[in-house]
Length: 85
Image 1 (tube, rainbow, N blue to C red):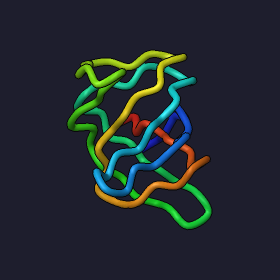
Image 2 (image 1 turned 90 degrees about the vertical axis):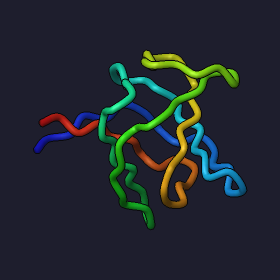
Image 3 (image 1 turned 180 degrees about the vertical axis):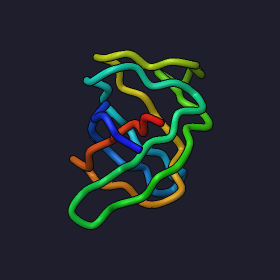
Image 4 (image 1 turned 180 degrees about the horizontal axis):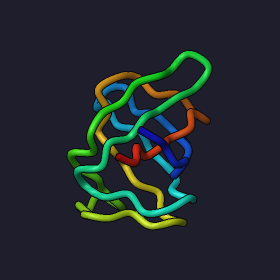
């Protein structure tokens, strides 16, 4: 399985388990599997929900800052990849 870089974590909100991700390398959709990797971070999960400005969205495009609920702690500057089957 290959991966393509789609964004970078700009902030993590620990109380709610949400990563703010700036999209810059392609589209990201509900149902896509993402991998978040950094110095001490490495996990994969499906995208179950995304929000832009507190509004649910189905697709995120380059230039958008989206909030995604994550299962593990993400850190600022972690790289976000989309898995390509």
